[in-house]
Length: 373
Image (tube, rainbow, N blue to C red; front, side, top):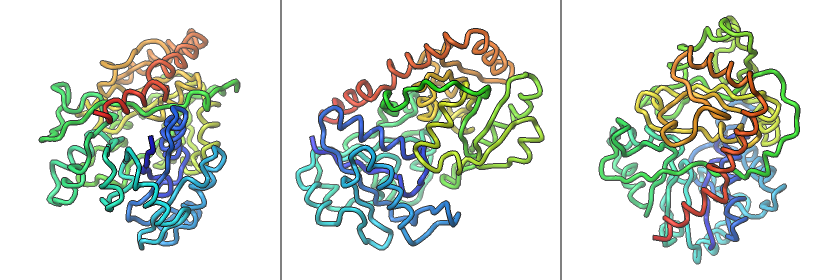
C-alpha cells in the first residue's frame, strides 16, 4: 500500500516524539508498504535553541531531515508551514503521492486540516496518543470544527486500552475508539550497554496542551515525591519542571530538553538506565484510561525493566516481572526491591514483553487489518 503518515516531529522536535512517528514509518516499510511523512498542523514549531515557538520553520525542517535521512527516508517527507509554504518535498509532490494513496494515518494531530488530497484517500485513521484528554476535549468543546474533524476518519484508535469501556469514566459520545499500542522497532533498541545504577524516566511536569481538561503529571508525582528518602535506590529524572524542588526531596535531575535533543540522545539515556520509574498524568490515572506509555515500551525493548503507575493498563498487559505496576508509594518500593533482587530475570522478561506485545510486526498488521474493513 501507499501510506501517508502525518506526525508532529517538527512541532515537538525531541527524541521521544520523533521515535513515535519513525517507528510507525519503519514498521510499515518493513511490512512492504511505501510511506510518505507529512506534517501540516498550522502551528508554529518549537525551536529549542531559541526556546520559543518560531515562525521560521528551519530548525524543525532540518530536524525532520536529520531524523529521517539515516533511515533512508530523507526524501520522503514534507512540512507545511503555518503560512502554507511547503518544505522538503513540494505541494505537487505531496498531491501526486496522495492521489493514489491507499491509507492516511494521522498520529496525534499531525495535521488538523482536511485538505482535498487527504480527504480523498479512501481509508483514513486517527491514532490518539493522549487518551482521556482527547475524548474529554471533544465532549467539552464548543468548536464544532474539532468534533467534525474526527468525523472525517473511518477509524479512530487510542493508546487508552479502557477508553469506551465500563472500566473507564471518560465519555466518548457517538465515537468508537479502538485499542492499539505504539509499535516498536525492536532491533533499534538492541542494547549491550552496561546500565548505570539509576531508575529513570523522561517527563514533563505540566503540559501546555489540553488546558481545558487539566490533570497533569504534577498532581500525581507529588504523591511519590518523598520516595527517595525511603530507599537506597538512586533516581534520575530528565524533566521539564521544578528541578530545585525535586532535588530537595532526593531526586537527581537533568534537563529533559537536553536528553531529548536527538533520537540518539534519548535512546542512550534509556539504554544507560537500570530501569524506568514512571508516574502518569492525573487524568490518565483518575479516569482509568488504560494508557500505556510509548516511552515505557522503549525501556522494555532496550531490556530495561519498567516500574510504572497503573492507569488500568494492568488489565491488558502482564505485570509482575519485567513490567511492574504500582498505585501507591508502598507498592513502588516493593517493585524496586523486586527488580533489584533478580535484575537479570526482570531485564530478560522486559525485552520479551516488548517483543510479544509491542513489536511493530505484531501491532501494525492488526491495525492495518482493521483499516481494510
